Image 1: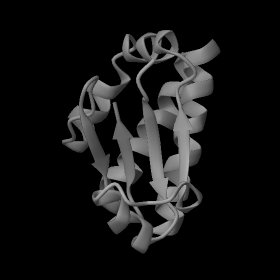
Image 2: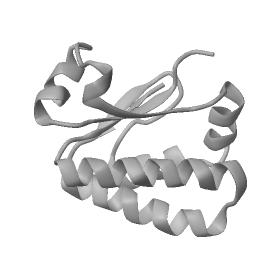
Image 3: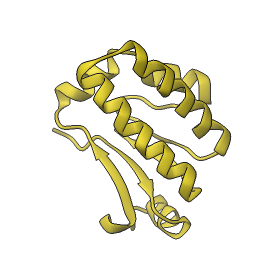
Image 4: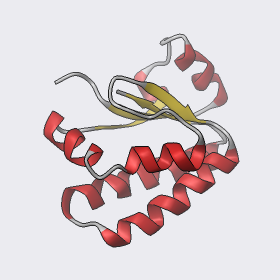
Length: 116
């Protein structure tokens, strides 16, 4: 499995390091998909496509992108809070993990980055 993770830097300094792939593991909060199957099941829900439409991002398989503005993080958070009410199982568990990361990014005033 190739690494597919969602990352939130703990500080602005760590965020700058992340740009150059120099951030240390203890400077990041990460969610790693357990398997390719989990990732592809999640992708099949079109959640990333909907986030892209809402936030003007380009989150997709074989793409890396992030949400850095407060507005885009808030919009994404609201969308996922609503979306989790209509899903269950693994997808709902993953949404809950992404929600936790978004809340961390908002609280720390850093971005949330999707590395696929």
